[in-house]
Amino acid sequence: WRGNEQTLRKPGQVNTSQNASRRQWSIRPTRTQLPFCQLVNQTVSLEKEGCPRCHPVETTICSGHCITKDPVIKTLFSKVYQHVCTYRDFYHKTFELPDCLPGVDPTVTYPVALSCHCGGCAMDTSDCTFESMQPNSCMKDEPFYY
Image 1 (tube, rainbow, N blue to C red):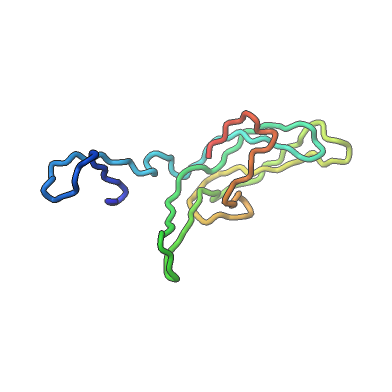
Image 2 (spheres, rainbow, N blue to C red; image 1 turned 45 degrees about the vertical axis):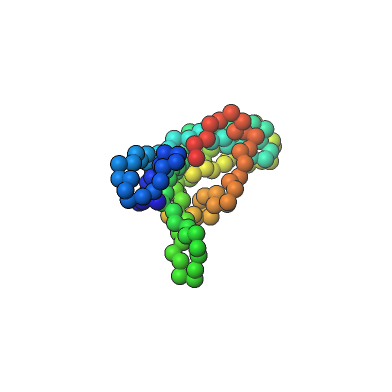
């Protein structure tokens, strides 16, 4: 590895200092292929037990690439940081679901991101699990942008 690029050789090519004219292809770093952490418009489906229908709403979420460091050989003094794209500022919006059963509070709240940053995962506002929650029955054909 050289910086963030990997040098590839043609099959059968030898790595010698005498082979100065060899061809090189470089693989673009992932961070240039993925968008950096940013606000993204997203449709989410609101649902609640006791309310028979899902209701799609448009909101803003945080999505994109963050720099992460996880050394192969870990020692007591290794610096490991797992940054994720998460909310910096947000507010909760309230929506009233139609056709809920009698006695069921029809209100649900969902976050609306105002700004994003790369930082530690906040369990109170984000899904920080290794394997994210599976899409619910409301999100059958909704595209989701990770």
